[in-house]
Length: 64
Image (tube, rainbow, N blue to C red; front, side, top):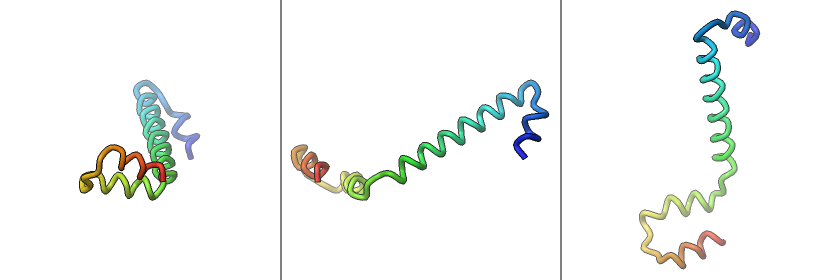
């Protein structure tokens, strides 16, 4: 299927294929990073606007 697209590329279509490739690579990298996040970190980041902790407290929470 992909072979059909690459056989008929001419002129400006190279830019279209390149931009599609960049988008797919970016999407895959971001997806992998999101899957690797620890739940503790996500919970900590979601609670930041609600907490009135000092910086020392925040550092202790991150190290747990």
